[in-house]
Length: 451
Image (cartoon, rainbow, N blue to C red; front, side, top):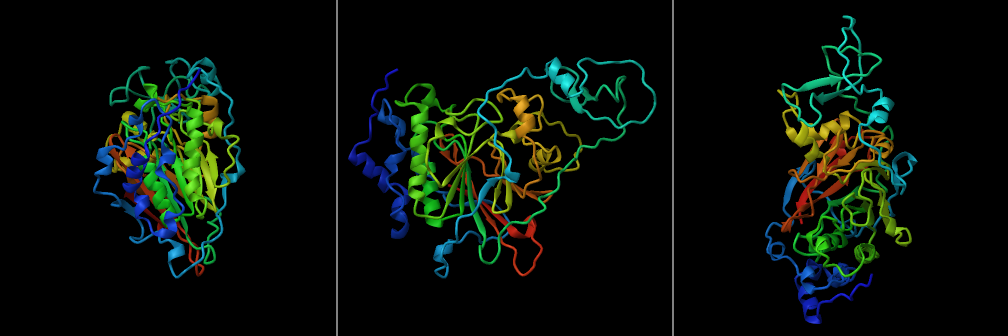
């Protein structure tokens, strides 16, 4: 297949883009790092696809703090406070040294006979009379019709064949199997100072453009404030974007993705910030399945500042254990959850707590119809190895920060929402000082900020 050369913007158009960018308003020290906004411009069959969205450029709420946790004042640039020299790079590794999901492709039929047999679940109901003996059974709550939704008249408790062959009446439910928090504390002290993190989730463009202005603005802020880590949760190149569907891009997805990564990292070369990019099943360069391995096209990309992570991932950042998934599991759970007089009345907290209580990044079976799950990989890679200190759950539901079982759960929403700008999160983790007891309640500060 032959691709046409893309139409690049004129010098006048490039200057207009540069003048409207917040990069132009940075101090001289930081402005030298940022490069030209044109590096975000894809090759295309028409220049219209990179025209900035007017709704985004006219926004008036940029920088507004819409949700917070902990201290009101956080995230000072260490280079600009008392002339403190930037600390050395933080360490970023998969938690416990666990291997990431491989590139193999494997799909199995959901809930077929082999799956049910393997997990000890009955493939058909057995209504024979059982004894009145009290037992403890392992099972799941299901609807009495295969395609129905839970409601007050259709709830069944499905047990295993060994302990409940004839059915049973439940007298008590044990639903909370929360794992403990990490035993080791963060490797932060008075010498290292606080750990600072920016977190954002895709999409990174408005639905009518591929100009990547929200991402450009986020990179500008990153250069200006120099967090230790910038976490970009996919998709960076959204497979669902209308301009990808209509064939406007005049280069392969892989070529543009690699250029996009270069565009992100190049302005950050002279600052301390390291970058974590989390995969997504909606990434145009990734396999459409969950769990999702890191993009294949980045294998030969030599960027020491970038760490590519699978979706989901549990990552150790200088002893701070952070869990993250790109899938909108909160929305999926919200569509299926049925609650009557719940003990936790806050719906968003209740939805997020299911992940912690069930030790899983995606505790919903069968999954949402839009999510292609590889069940074998789900068993191996989508389970929580520990309750993390911080969990990032980007969702189309309203942004929030919650403390659940000692885990700070954050929904930063999306950096771009339809035709307008979205939000991202700033995280500050304080070090252990003066023999104080470290906890997420006293040492973690969060702000969700409008881009």
